[in-house]
Image (cartoon, rainbow, N blue to C red):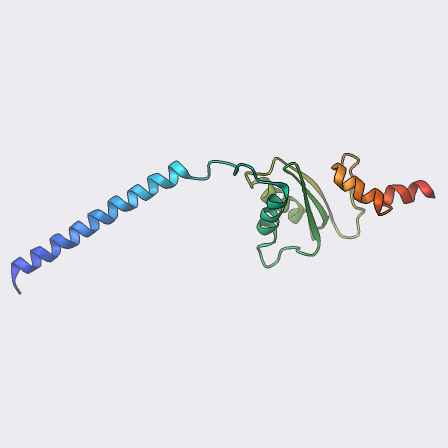
Length: 142
């Protein structure tokens, strides 16, 4: 084997490794600088709802049919049933980690327990309940 070819191959490998190292380091710096700097500007409620649902219902064991998500001015409201108290807390924590979420109203409850109600629900939710003859109207009629 020719020594000059061995040295030339080693030098070429060294240069490639050095270029890769520099490129990798630059990428890490950019990742830190640009990272997740916060909420995306101008995200409307419908887009935020889709983002929250994607985050919550991604796992295979997610309670897709049991939890309803609504958003009003960046505040997420979770309604429905969860299997256990840990799942209730876990779903709320996952929603709070989304940077665009301004607040969370957790109205989840366990099976065979009464659902919590909110008198300070967003106006659009109150209007829907009033039009459909919500529980508050039925109770007053008794």
